[in-house]
Image (cartoon, rainbow, N blue to C red; front, side):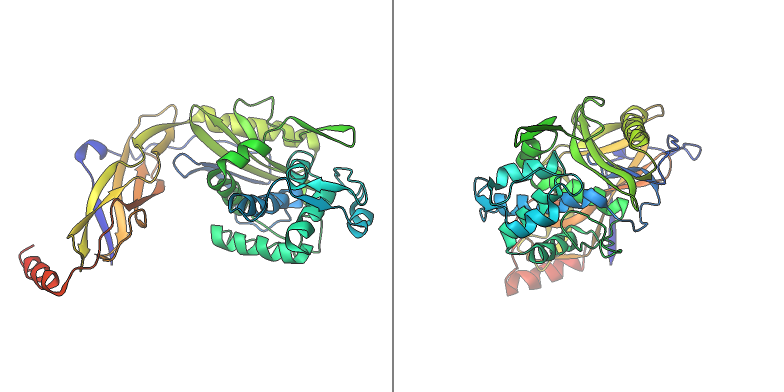
Length: 378
């Protein structure tokens, strides 16, 4: 059964029926923006439409590599051989790191070659070096996509090269991929994304990220372009502790991708604002527990929680807690057990996780009998 808990009256405010969200008319056929500080979707156009990702697929290649590095399975200084087969297939084919045949290249430099230079050659060499074959690595990519909730995407190769529709994503799934990269690997994200340029083989190439140098706080992620896909970009920027992720796709020119990416992100920061709700670790409310050593468990914020609101309107919103219940012991501290639901003035909702603030073990037989007796009078 789904349970709702009302919060303190101080957090429950009137919702004017006439309120509207800020408007924006993107020039991109596909566009999506989410505020990671609250989870609020600020804009959505064709966000669930399947499309070829082009080089934006490389974000998943990088995320899998980040998992291996942070998981202690791969050292970033590990050297990988540039095999002759990989070199012949990918040397100067599309965007390139310009790797040399039989060259030994570290995982660290290959990642810079992928993230900053969008090297098709670097992507395949990294995949083969870490998984034995590109297809084995692709299997890891699809497994990771499943785990993070990219429910409408599939990868057929590691670099997004056209493959007759085997590889496809959606704008919403690309935003999910960006979110996972930023939140699961913050140190590696900072190290590799947002670099202005990278030099290899004496060739200095600029980062193709259209936001860098144009939008304050811009630090990622990837562009993509093929004739079939058009010009696309998944980008992120952080200002005053507030992080946005945008996805645009299907644009017709390189310059239009730059213009729309910058304008879209500036709209996200200018037309919207956030208000803090709860600091990380703050108890929000208690929920009843069945068959536990304790009859209730505190629900706490797993991170700083905020609500996103139109910058020009009043800050009216309603807050409630929703969980599938009743909760049943045992419950582990830190386990997600509920959602904080915020209804804003335009009638839209923002959903954030709440976790158990402490362990609740199973009650002994006598405690269960006693709790059952007490429940008769609750």
